[in-house]
Image (cartoon, rainbow, N blue to C red; front, side, top):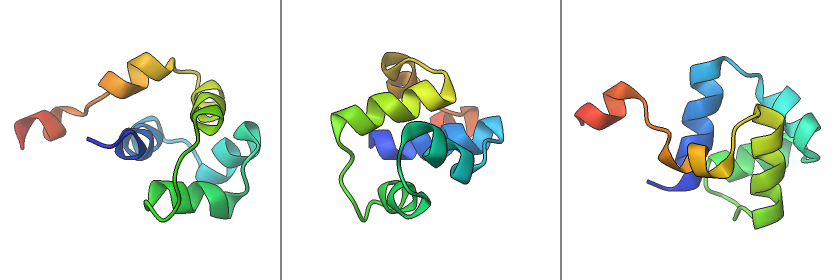
Length: 72
């Protein structure tokens, strides 16, 4: 799974608002949207900033899966 999929799933799972995550991570809402829709590459510093905004360690985010993801 692409880390961008994990970010998107985690945002949805936790009920975060993309605008708030974008603002906290220093990205524009369009930049975050493009990352989540795989129209833009995710740079390492952006990954760390997004993880900080969501209060999750990058290693934990990498391993994050929803139960329904495991079933498929």
